[in-house]
Every structure is written in C-alpha cells, then in structure tokens.
Image (cartoon, rainbow, N blue to C red):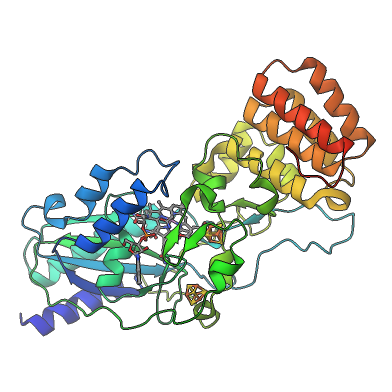
Length: 403
Ligand code: B12
Ligand code: SF4
Ligand code: SF4
C-alpha cells in the first residue's frame, strides 16, 4: 500500500468508526509542550490536581515510551455539539418566583460519558485498520485519562489550533470536541499544523468570571470553575463562590463567548456510530433542590454512565448550595430553598453543611437567620462553625462580602 493510500485508508476508517476529525503526527517527543506543562506545574497553575505530576508529563510527552517502536500518532476528535444541544442551556434568571431554581451543566456532560464511547470507537478503528492491512497493528490509545497531552497532539497533527483559553479550536466544529489519540508503529505521513491563531481577540480572557485565564494560553487550574465544581473534593474558596454563578458542573463561558464557536456545526453520525447520545438524566439546567437533597441511591440511579459521576453526590450538593446562594433572593429565597438548605445544614457531611450555611447567609431573611442560629448552637465541626459564623456576620451586614 502506498503512503497516500494508507493515509486515505486511515481517514476512511476513522470516519467509519464515528470520528469527526482525524490527523497524523510523528511519534517524536513533544518537547516544547513538555516544557510548557512542567513550567505550569512549577508555577503552581496545576495546583489541586495531585495526579498531574512532572513524571506523568515526562511519560506523556514521549510516545515511544508509551508504545515501544512507536512511529506515528493518529489524533482523533468527536464533536459533542450534538443536534439539539446548540441552545444555551442556561437557567432563565428572569423567570418568575414560582419557577424551580435551576443550575447550569457544561455542554460536554450533556452526552453520556465520552471515555467509554471514544475508546470503543478507537478499538473499532484499529480493528478496521488491521482488516484493511491484513496484519496486526501495534497500537495504544488514550482519551483524556491517559498521560498524553491530548491538545498538544491534536495541535501538532493539524486537527486544530490552541485558543487563548487553552482549548483546541477546530475548523468546522469549534472547540466543542473531545480529543484522543492512537499511538502506532505504522510509518505514516504527518499532517502539518494549522497556521491559525486567535489574532487580537481576548474575549475569553475578559469574560472568564474567576480570572482563571491568567495570561493567553495559561489557565490557573485552582481558579477555574471546571476544576472547582468537578475535581475539587473539599470546600470551594469563599472568595470564588460569588463568581461562579449558577454553574454546578463544569463551565462553558470561555467557549460560549468564542467567535470561532459561533460557526460550529454538530457532529456527524455514521451508520455504525450515531452522534454521542444525549443523556436524558442530565440536562443543561438541572433543578437545584433535586440535586441538593438527592440520596446516594438516587444519584447513582440518575447519573450512572454520565460524566456527572466524577463530581460525586457530595460535590454536586456542595455545588447546588453555591448556585442557590448566588441566585440569592428572590429566586432561591422563594418557596422551598431555605427549608431545604436548613435540612442539609443539619444532616449532610461537613463540606455540604458549610456551603449550605454560606448559601443561607447569601439568601438571608428571618427564616435563614433562625436556621443558622440553631445550627450555630448544635454544630461541632470547627470548619462548619466558622462558615456559620461568617454567614451570620454577613446577614448582620448585608451587602458586605463574607469574610
Ligand atoms: C487537567 C485538565 C483540565 C483541568 C486544567 C485545564 C487546563 N487548561 O489545563 C481543568 C479541570 C480546569 C479542565 C477544564 C476543562 N477541560 Co480539561 N483536561 C485536562 C487534561 C486531563 C489535561 C490538560 C493538561 O495537560 N493541562 C496542562 C496544560 C499545560 O496544558 P494546556 O493548557 O493545554 O497547555 C498548552 C498550551 O497552553 C500551549 N501553549 C503554551 N504557551 C503557548 C503560547 C502560544 C503562542 C500557543 C499557540 C500555545 C501555547 O502549550 C501547552 C502544552 O501543550 C486534558 C486531557 C489530556 N489528557 O490532555 C483535559 C482536556 C484538556 N479538557 C477538556 C475539556 C473539554 C475541558 C473543559 C472545556 C470542560 C468544561 N466545559 O468544564 C474545561 C476547559 C477549561 C479551560 N479553559 O481549559 C478537553 C479539551 C478539548 C479541546 N477542544 O481542547 C480535554 C483535551 C479532554 C479530552 N480528551 O477531550 N481540564
Ligand atoms: S471554564 Fe470557565 S472558569 Fe474555567 S477558564 Fe473557562 S471561563 Fe474561566
Ligand atoms: S475567545 Fe478569542 S481569544 Fe479566546 S479562544 Fe476564542 S478566538 Fe481565541
């Protein structure tokens, strides 16, 4: 098979397996990306992710270490802008007071967990290649949870280019794409990186509510709402909570404002692989009170097989408290929110209790004050006691930020 024919076969097999994007790069070390990632760790910009270590970066930027004899890396992408998900899923803050208080979920989590779907497609892709070639192909594949820098590989393989928000922007599908790669011993002709850039645009930097994009191409993990709502297991720093709005899982602001995404189209289905399936359990604007009082069994029954599992039930309850606190009166204060936060304040784990206290402080009113005062007398955990004291102080001086 000629080099050109082999490349065409790879593209055809990738499309048949359900990938919207495919590009090839060499298995050379990703030296510049390695340096940038190591520098990011040393500057404290990856703080909060203990598994993101220097040795992981070293391994992940040397394909030949991950697959002995590696010659090429085939980069693959799937759009998660599935039909029907193009609408902004944001809660309508202008709804009347009778409306349920709703949070917001990042678009990537509206589809069922992509790791499994992508890895299944990658297996099919490699099997298809082997059939076409009539011989076994040495291959190793990764999606997200492997050590490789998925974006660095996609950039070098010409799938897309780095945006200043650090996401890979692709022609046609914007940044609404999941990325993965197959390392192989096949000798393939590499694609050229795209000659595109953000130019003078800085919209994502200006609009990031927490100031997490600290410089072009640099995200401070510990300030990013995506980290705070998904990966972070403990309390959310109090000064960041008011900046998080109604996000309860991930954040899409730096992608929603991106002009490249305005022209993005949904992913393509193939006869074998439909577009990533939308989970009926997750919607863009879930009911915050349902999240707040969900039992472990309810949580598992509803979210099994979706990305939401990553945050765990306690994480989602904590996030619901922050969103309710940010909706504030009148939306969260009307009806059932205050008593529900009161029940959580006396019955949940310490992280959730602390955030429930914060939310009650933000919502305010006599009922919230009474619940906080009762809890102040009963609470034994020092961290939660401190949250309650801060919330009571905030209630006494409305308009001043909690200490
Ligand atoms: C850790 C991680 C996170 C962390 C840290 C984010 C970050 N920016 O690093 C948190 C939890 C915050 C996160 C959030 C999100 N993530 Co994430 N995350 C990862 C993970 C596991 C590793 C990323 C990594 O290595 N970061 C380290 C830094 C060093 O990498 P980097 O920011 O890309 O740095 C490069 C550029 O800055 C570039 N660079 C540096 N200087 C310069 C200068 C110039 C001029 C240029 C052009 C480039 C450039 O070089 C660096 C090295 O390549 C990858 C999966 C993987 N295995 O790669 C997914 C991944 C990056 N995440 C993904 C997604 C979808 C998200 C979210 C959109 C989810 C959401 N909606 O909430 C947000 C986006 C937030 C954001 N603005 O980045 C996708 C991105 C797809 C895409 N189109 O780019 C990935 C690839 C998962 C996947 N396989 O699909 N994520
Ligand atoms: S995902 Fe949200 S918080 Fe994170 S960098 Fe983008 S806009 Fe900022
Ligand atoms: S919003 Fe502007 S600066 Fe940010 S990634 Fe998109 S084009 Fe680049």
